[in-house]
Image 1 (tube, rainbow, N blue to C red):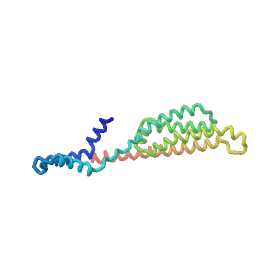
Image 2: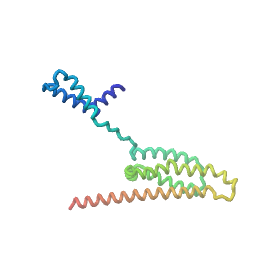
Image 3: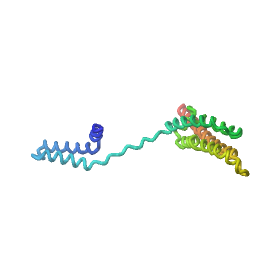
Image 4: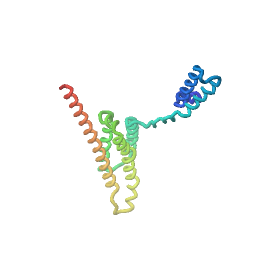
Length: 200
């Protein structure tokens, strides 16, 4: 620990600027300007250099890359799939959920979509929110309220709410997939133009 602090100081701007001042003091000593007070001159110039040195630049935060975040979302999606396998849903909601799961699995599957998503933090956020928050909350809300609505007739069935929520989530995932397809098409078009221009 102490060794690393010493090494950090030796590489710091304060030490480097102070050392340059100390070298200037040695030059003054060898040229005879400093006289018998050369130790004071060298130490003084070192101290002055260390004081006027610019402050150290803090290191930027090391946030996870979208690619690393995508790996975490894949792991969370596996946990979500295990949870959903244990939940009993009505046929219509189960069908919509199966479609949504297929779409999310395709977006998270390593391949061209994942490569494009790794360059799109907003797309990773949309997927992350769907996997970690939206789908589990929609299903859990249905499971918790299903029995309660039997005691309060006349309200809209929780199955309808779940179906509508899953439909909205599927549409959002479809928009993300369409955006990725569009990005891939533009990338291919750009590469084709590049090859054509290179050939001319």
